[in-house]
Image (cartoon, rainbow, N blue to C red; front, side):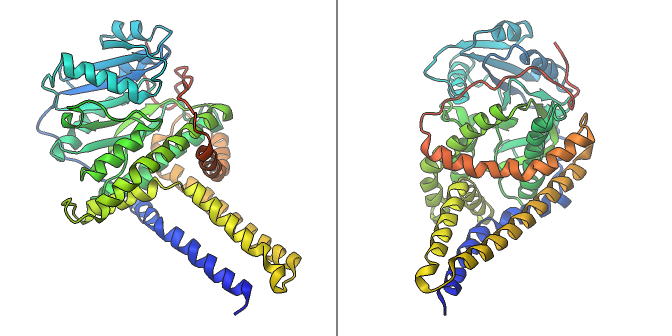
Length: 432
């Protein structure tokens, strides 16, 4: 067996193992195309606290609170809490004028949303107790809720016994502002259609994404624990390691405002990548213990969900680059074994280019399929914008590889405000 043949066998085997680790993603995506979990109408209307962290969100906080008031759910069953976190604008005043229970928290050393939640739940526990709350929603200040949002989440929460986390459909209020907001919109509805739907249909756990989720009060009876750059991933990993489930309600739809520029996109996603890396370093060992422990009482689906989230928090970009560099290093040694280096590099380049082109085309087709499937929920977007976003979709995903590598070395990232202006072209949002 020649050197090149051996090298090819080794790396084909490694790459196959790598993709086999993620094969179930494709299975869940396929299931999500054809199925949706529907929950029966609840026979009880539970009481909920709606928790909102806001930092300089005077442009959008009013429309969120108006959308909550417009929900087809008894107003006396909803208690709205807002923490104005390191604000220098009129966020707190506007929230009070809209009837929210507002707390102001200023601590420049504690800048992530997780610190805001920790402070707010400490205040809720100290001043309100459980106040008869059956659950808490986590909602972002730039979100807008559909009129049936709380009702549909209540249906799902009651149907699942009020014991598990329930997340919802994350749409974009400014889907059609430009190609960047459109890319973000595709990103989030992709997670709903191709990730969350299939997992829930199979009785497995999905994950929370940012905000738009509901959980039982017992999870915060001792306060909020998650304060890193990506508290949603921390929260998900811990719930699954403890045997809890994160389920998905497709009928409950909320909207949030997406960035419009490459600069803001890179800044936000670099923060996500670093937060993702922190979750890997702090939670992977715990997840592995939970996965292989025989004393945690996990059934097959819950154990598979732990495997799923463990695979999801792997630094896949870093692993991909490391494997690629090793492969290139192996090819660079070809002259030592009597091979024509130029010919080998030309063949490798052509094969790589063909694989890249095929992957690019399939990814674009995936975006086109997604837009077609979710067309009823995508409004106010021009055909040109959608076409540009579909064509750029593979590059939008590929950026994650480079950001993962950068996040490995950039240790001092901090949470910075993502500017929101209250743009609306997809959601029928109330205005203040």
